[in-house]
Length: 205
Image (cartoon, rainbow, N blue to C red):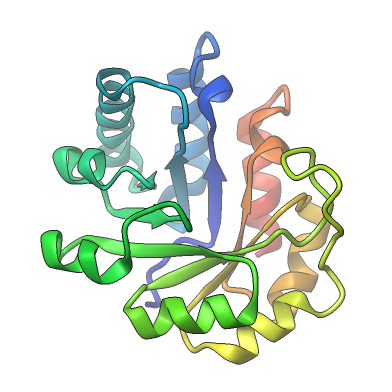
């Protein structure tokens, strides 16, 4: 899957509800272009709000070529016609998504080489593997940076996107280890200038 974006800007509920989110998202998507993807990831937003935000981001895709990927919510991904869906361990299975949405590209979130193998065998197009470094979203869990990405890359043939506490200065090392690209949340959205932050990640891939 050679056209898979290499910088994934992952959101959450708090990020998407910030004032001016769509304006900031447009700036990020313009910088990343077809080398980037913005992930719509929500646990709390009601379906109409999530649908509305996703449609707005899909319009920005038309301007920027930056992908729009919906996490978990296959119904929203289908309704909006986005470029892909990112499945977690709580999502429906990859084969089930393929049956109801054969044209939808599918990513799987994994935490071990075995999970990555299972996702590839099931038919996923890529995996997001983490977490690589310590991150506030997973307090108390040890970092996996030493050999984790190497092991996941060695286990599969589809693209691996590294996630978890990744800063721009980590990117080149991860790509050198075989990662197709990286995903970031706070490293992009918590920066006062998210556009500049996104460009820093992209410049290192």
